[in-house]
Amino acid sequence: MDRNIWAGVGVGLAVGLGIGYFIGRGHGSDAVNNLPLPVATQPAAVSPELALQRRIFDAQQATQREPNNVQAWISLGNDYYDSHQPQKSIEAYDKALALDPRNPNVLTDQGIMYRELKAFDKALANFQKANAIDPKHLQSLFNQGIVYAQDLKDKPKAIKVWKRVIELDPASLQAQNSQKAIEELNASPALR
Image (cartoon, rainbow, N blue to C red; front, top):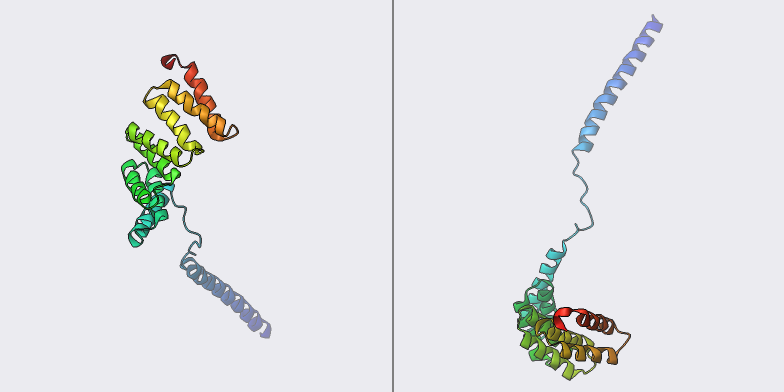
């Protein structure tokens, strides 16, 4: 009888442990499954458009806080430029140029925006003014050639300007692009 008691106790203990294990495991599993998922510590990827809109907002705030901050106006103009808002870009660049009228880069960027609005005379005037401020400003010279060739259909003036770019810095990207543009212009039957 002792043996049967011990066997019963052993079986009861084993069954009890088994039931306890499964109950505990089930409860523990539910507890684990009901825990909130960990939150990602890295920010989600932001689209380039959203990032650009954020930069515009930040630049607008900076110009409101510091209306005499030329760099804030340039940043705002550049962001409008990048978001293809030429009129707003021109206006921001106007504010920057009121504070720093001798900035050939801003004049050139504003000229590109005038060209986008098909205000070719204003674009050309900006490029020429930028080049008058800095006669070695290759980008303003190169862009003059674009306006002459593509918009005003004045092949001789375009070639003259692009040759000047090549003379100033033959190893530059603008010189390489000028050489290609001259070759294309010369090969084009419409502009011979």
